[in-house]
Image (cartoon, rainbow, N blue to C red; front, side, top):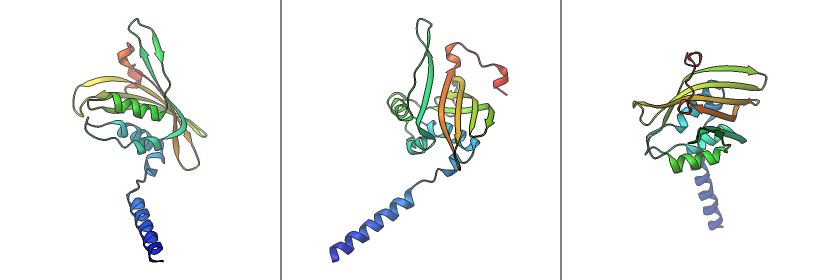
Length: 170
């Protein structure tokens, strides 16, 4: 009986410690501004700074697609479609410097349960270093009963040869 009681007590202590350490990401997903801010914050940081990938994963529906566009050496354009989990692996394996992405401006369209955010961004390797790149994230959101989800992000960078029009920099 004592072993059972000790096991039960240990289980309760571990569970309560786990609950005390769990993070509340509700603020991130309760508004469009919240989810966009969280999206940029969670991927940004110094090279040695660990990212909160659980926070990142919480922003998305399981079927979400992240779609970067690219330009080949011979000038052809392409795209690839990856899951949030594939993005985590790609980021973890390939980003060896710091990476800071901030929103410069955005336009927003909403109707019912859908929202589209056309978000102009810039990237840097350090928080105050020179701008490495700029571009536009086309972010589609789904509004569920009490939260937003990212369902896709489709992006294009200026480095592909497309200067950002002034209207997206205001």
